[in-house]
Image (cartoon, rainbow, N blue to C red; front, side):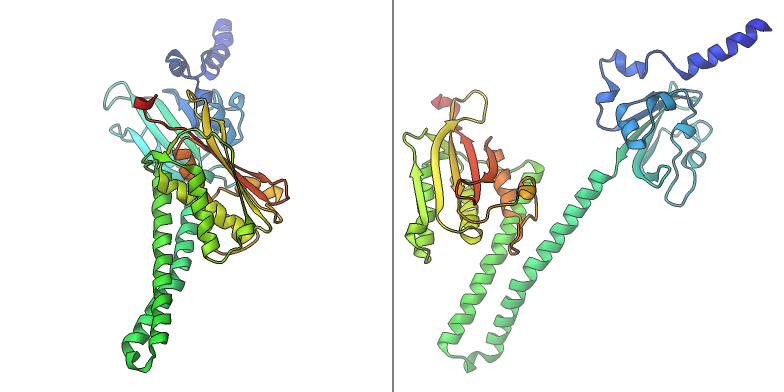
Amino acid sequence: MTVGTSSAPGARQARRTPAPRCGDLAELGIDPDELPDGLVIADEHGHVICFNAAAQRITATAAADALGQRLEKALPLEDLEGRRWWQLTDPYGGLSIRVRQPERNLLLPGGREVLVSARYVRTEPTGPVRRVVVTLRDTEARRRTERSHAELIATVAHELRSPLTSVKGFTATLLAKWERFTDDQKRLMLETVDADADRVTRLIAELLDISRIDSGRLEVRRQPVDMGAAVGRHIQAYVAAGQPADRFLLRIEQPLPDLWADPDKVDQVLSNLLENAVRHGEGTVTIDVTPSASPREGEDVGTSVTVSDEGLGIPEESMNRVFTRFWRGSKRGGTGLGLYIVKGIVEAHGGTITVGRAPGGGAEFRFTLPVGAPAYLA
C-alpha cells in the first residue's frame, strides 16, 4: 500500500507535466512557440500536453499553469450565448465519426473573443480520440480587416455619390430642356459631366490598383525609363495648368543609371507625390533625381527621386500612417488611397519609399527603384 500511495502522485505528475512539451512537433524540427497561432494539444485523457507561446499570449495564461490541466479547465471557452463549449462539443464522448470542429467565435473568461477550431486525431477512423488539437486566433486582425473593408466601401460610396449625382442631374436637365439652353450653357454642363466621369474613372482605377496590390497581382511591365524626362513632363503640365514655373526646382545628378520600370506606374507615383506637394505644401517644390544604392540584392545602383516642399510638413505622430489607407493628413479631400497605392507600386518594382521632414520644414518623400534591367542585358 505504501508503494501504491507514493507512486500514484508520481504517475499523475508524469502525466501532467510531460518531459518533451509538444514532443511530436519537436521531433519534426518545428518549434511550437514560433507558430503564429495559438496551439493547444490534449492527450487521450483530456490533459493538456502542449500550450505554445501564442496560446499564452492570446489566453493570458502561463504554459506552466495550463500543462497537465484538463482541457476544459485550461481553456474555459464559452459560445456567444454563454454556453460552455466543451460540454456542447464533448470531443471524447461524442460521435466517433467526427474529425474536427470548424472555426467559430468563442469567448474566454473576461469576454475576450477568439477564433477557435479543433481537430480530433484518431488512430482508427471510428476509434477513440488520441489527441485534440486546438488552434486559437486573435480576432483583432480580422476585425481590422473588416473595418478596413467597411471604410473602403463607405469611402467609395461617398466619392461616387457626388459625381454620379452631378452626371445624372445635368444629363436629365439637358434631355428635358435642351432647347431652353444656349450653346455656352450646354457646353458648360457637358464639360462638368465629362470632368465628373473622369473622376469616377480615376476612382475605379484606384480600386483596381488596391485589389491588385492586396492580392499581390500588380503587374509591372518594365521598359527603359528616363526619370528626369518623366519628372520634367509633370512639371510642364502643372505650369501649363497655371502654376508659376518658378515654384518648381528640378535637380538631376548625372550620370543616372539606365532604369527599367513600368513607365505608366512611374508616372502614377510622380503624379501623386507632386500633386500632394502642390496642393498641401507651400513654397518651392524641389525634385531631386539622383543615382543611389539599389534597394535590391545583387544590384549596385538604383535611381532615387526626392520630392519636398516648404510647407508645414507632416506631424511626427502621423509619419507611420502616411502610407496606410484613408490617411488624408490635416486637410480633408480625396479618397486617402493615393499614397497607399504609391507604396504598393514602388514595392512591386522592388523599391522602397520613405517620408520625412524636408530641410525647408515641409514634407519630403523619397522613393528608390532598382535598375531592374532584364537578364539578357546583365
